[in-house]
Image (cartoon, rainbow, N blue to C red; front, side, top):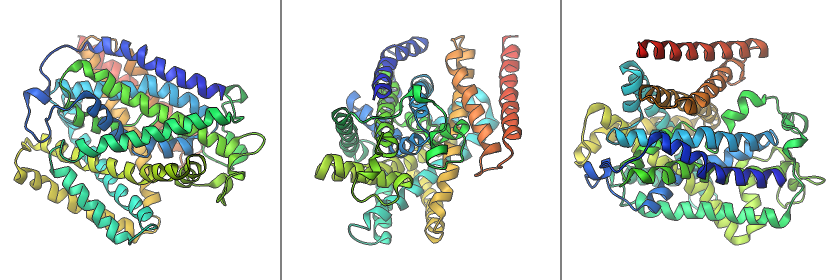
Length: 482
């Protein structure tokens, strides 16, 4: 619990100290924001700061900081380091700067920002890449909560239809009509669950692995894990440290912020909050898998899989055991409501990205339907494939992790180029950009989910790709200066 306590303090200090440093680099001012200058009552709508924060938090969170942290904790205490350092120096910087860049460019989506700083070809690639990723998220987050809900009442087909109809409404209606009203409630539920579990941890004071016990792959010895910490830990724990999906969501709220000075508490602050949630769940998981002398799973009722208990099962077991009836309700919100609220904003983000690319204003329903009908048809086709294939969800999720972090790589390099052009200290973004480039490129070469090359070959090729990207950046910088 010492490592957990230090990590918790570090995240809070990270917001107040490093968050302020990054804010000074951006230098927010009192210029008119898109929410005011382009107000349309649909997507550009001024909302209260607290509400924008809660929506942003739920947009970027979903089940990511829960499931990712549970799976990442199997690697051992090294997960603490990644959550803390990744969140402060990469994830929160990524989210804040992508949100501010969107705000300063009229509230446009990620492909438009990438196109402005990396060129038209990068914009086209990012358009296809981000829209497909968002459709993937939306489709996955229809089927998985439907499978859980059917255990209580109804059938999978009923819940799939119900959830999909909700997605249609949330995508087409003004942001303050559905999202602005229900998101704060669900966000509060997730935060309350995390805080309640943190209180339970301090009451129980379990004997958990600490950083000084070693940061190697603890799961290799006790769980038989074959994945290497680098790069797999950094793909597994995404939303709690750094996630490319967030850069598709920040522009949604960049259209609702009334003043640039609200950017740090909303964008940087929401990511730090998500990091705290991930930290709590990683610690709960350490108790579940590695508590000494008796692991948590051996003392909790209803645990049959032991060390190999799935992430959703861990959530249900821990919440019901530690928090009782209230915990059961919160667990349901966590594993059902959270993915649904990520899915609807994924579709909304896709609509806005396509609208930006085509130059179609979205105030009229006819214009929104022009984009949404093809979007939902593609999603339905993908959803049907997923239902017909028993292992469809697992296959999709494996590749989603890599695609998500690759999106973060592109966003970080875009921000680095913007800062270099503006004469700002780009080193703050260059370091996480280089690191995540190494993670994603190495993963392609060494992971069994991808090429599965021999370790020394895969790592060497990952280093080569990272070096090539760095050479590209510094060559561009020299030419730009010249």
